Length: 403
Ligand SMILES: *Cc1c(COP(=O)(O)O)cnc(C)c1O
Image (cartoon, rainbow, N blue to C red; front, side, top):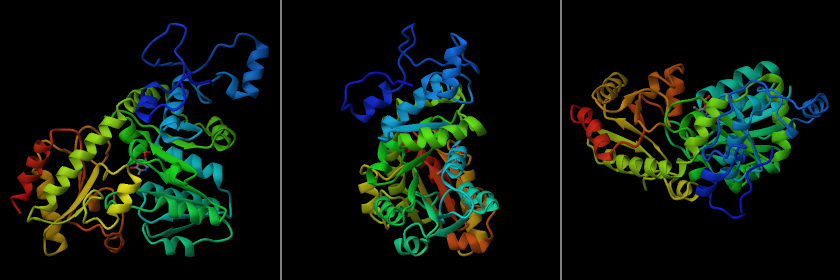
């Protein structure tokens, strides 16, 4: 469907507000929400034509919807990709990616530190259909190179990782992928296009969980794949039409409005996160802070280069303690002493969220697997929100001063 006519060369903050579909005949200034499952056809001939060529007009909500198109065009403009396709959740986007690019006998190389459900999707669910996956270090390029096989079709990375904020070199991974005749996909959930645009660094496709910062206010589930028109229109769109991981128009509309403030929200999340990271680094009860914006982070320079000079919105830290039991008790004390922060496991909200990774997102791993992943019982993750930073610090101080 045709996008709104805009002059070339607009800045991304402008595209976040202006890109999308044209207004309806009523001239609404705020994007319309088209809540409908079906679309009227002017005559049988046009209907037949649209069913054969879904790009030409709307037919049925599983295939597409003008509000969803508006979201797709806006997100693609912000990522700098030719196209995007919306999905019901971030995981549905990764499912769609796999269904579109992989078949029995194909091989995937994926960072060991990606989102837990992503690991399960590749290893377990795609494994059932004979797709092989190798999981490698987030940061050791030699491991990625050594894992390449003749049947490698896809490299998949997420940067920075959750909860330890390890950063991978997108450009270097793109070179490895292309040398192997494979595609590189980057899950850009944590940085969003406001900070990091993976295709500018050589990635072929970008995954989003719109549930996180794109909405930014913790309201709806959404996802997307951004990439070249040829893949989006010819490979992914027909699968959504057949398999139905369609983005709901209401959710698309919420995220469209979220995108308008993404740039300023991400700047504010990062400013708060850096201040909180510096505060934590000075606490005697904190033994280590994981934040790419701190000079102490092992990939600090790379992170700033890839992420528009900012550290991102997620900060993790280890509290002190001599053994796993004490570490867990101390982490729980910090979490339970919070009177403002939310105890929850999602992220990407205006509300700051505090969580204990070892018993939530990584609770299904064995203690050995957790040790290998570097996720100890004393680790606390913060998705730093937009409250006044002094109130966030004071809330953390309540528990820290008891240790
Ligand atoms: C949350 C998340 C996902 C999955 O998104 P949903 O919308 O919850 O399905 C994928 N990747 C990352 C990095 C995430 O944080």
